[in-house]
Length: 226
Image (cartoon, rainbow, N blue to C red; front, side, top):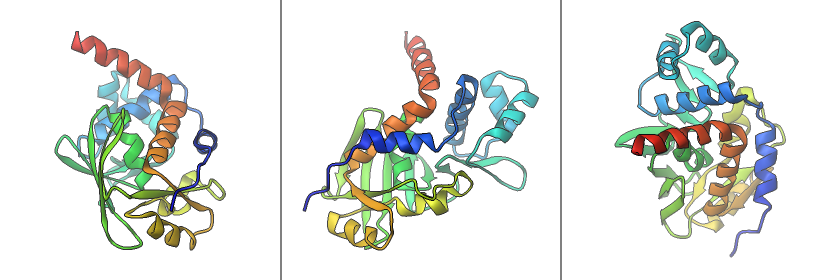
């Protein structure tokens, strides 16, 4: 059984289009938030301001405008745009720290944003089997089982205020295409894709949303290595 060939470029563009356009300053804030959150602790607005070297009041105001942010009772950020400190069935191990994501797609695009290699361990909702892989900005490798695939979901009904309930809950890894198809058939709008296609989907989304910030970060990282 083979997964169908899909226009991943078009699908990723449609997915990016239902997210707000972020200007350069908001992209910097978003990327900094991802990276601070990846350190494994809730992020205070003051922490983000210090990282960005900007006034705390300005950063706090911008953070209020950023979608897909979840906070704890103290107002600290505990999840943002797919990366979360709260346990889920998708584990993202980065620099020895166990982080979590809202769906399997998040595990494929977040490592590039962090500038780190990540080891992923996820559980199939259909069979309970474990799927593991390694991801960095260059791609995916060490996928086990080798026949593993994933599901994606169309953007019909997508709601930024409930990303988990309108998109992420349909997006998982599966140990085989048969298991993925059986699960997808019960969820309208869900389709099966290869993990390589999922990685490309996520890479295109990254650069549509945070391309300018990623380029700046790459230049900065390059200078640090000199």
